[in-house]
Length: 157
Image 1 (cartoon, one colour):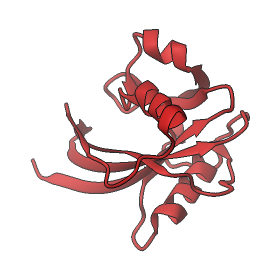
Image 2: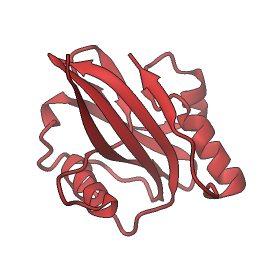
Image 3: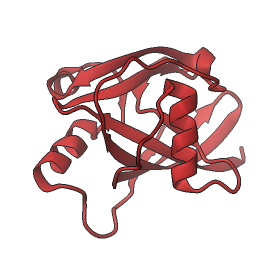
């Protein structure tokens, strides 16, 4: 099966009281809790892509992109296609808000939104991506944005 390469931008939306917004989605293999964001369209910059995705999925107007805090490459099969998705995660500090899907192509796959406390992430049996989300936020709170090039977490199904 041919692998389709895709670049995605994702947002770790973090409130002052350390809650993170996740979306529960089902792409045919059961539920996952993921950060908002998605694939970059041809010709889009990372910022333009992130702004578009956050508006489509959440109705959230991004005031300014935050720092790049994590990179991940995930290989997965969805339907009859094999994907290798490179993901850049930007941390955006924000007040909590009520997400409202606008025009996201994947709106039919979004089951719910939830603001998660870091302690809930630590003890949850749910499938959460990225798995290191709690650690990413704690590292950011303790040390600020990462300095220098980020390693890439490699995940395969």
